Length: 307
Ligand code: SER
Figure (cartoon, rainbow, N blue to C red):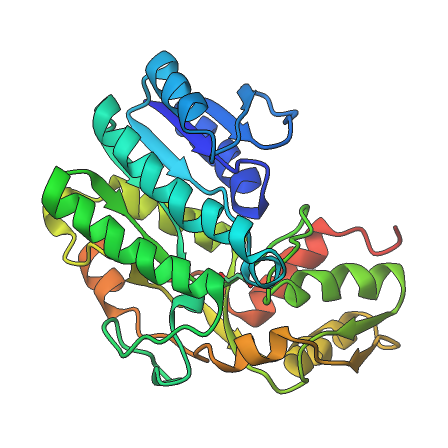
């Protein structure tokens, strides 16, 4: 299958590209920065409509994985650019995919689409959603757009409300859940970490291998099985910075974390702690493989302890 990725240099893209190559796909990986990947690559600014149209015409992908985004923290710092990338470019891309006859589109939503009036525990698939951050507002609008394009244009857009994603090899930036990756690396490199969230802020998280498996399961599911056309809830595990600190200390006993919450604390507090993912389990067989100890074990296998 011929596939096109946007934002392929990010945390998800970096793991998804090898997974698609293993599946035997012909992959064109694009990003705003040039990529050094073992596949065809191109520099693409997703806000440049003509460039996106041109690439779709030339590459003729069956599937598009639209990962380009400005995460929650960065979107607060650069609100207009955030909206352009997270919402306007997504809308344009959906239109161009209809025009180009793309069969399926993957576009990630996020737990950031929930808000302070969303139930925090075991959050249902269809709760009240009142996101307070611009990233979450764009994600919620994008979910509505995905469903709109399915009904109005028969564009088969599929989406997941990703929680924080944790994995080795790529340091995420601009997000609210980034601490979970950064804490591992700083524990090894410095022995301390200053966390921008409060110690007890529990959030839902997913190990990267589970995230990639979820994307592929969802994209390979028969269209008639999918009952959610906005974005599916998925859940892996929940932990707070303090709980992660305690896990890391099992490996590096001298490790200490300092807590200095910044503006991201408010965003994190408006997001759920655990998610009801029964629709994903029922419709396309989702279940996570990694809990917190398994995640830590996988991270320690990938991060050299004496770097
Ligand atoms: N992980 C993202 C962030 O923290 C949420 O989708 O911004």
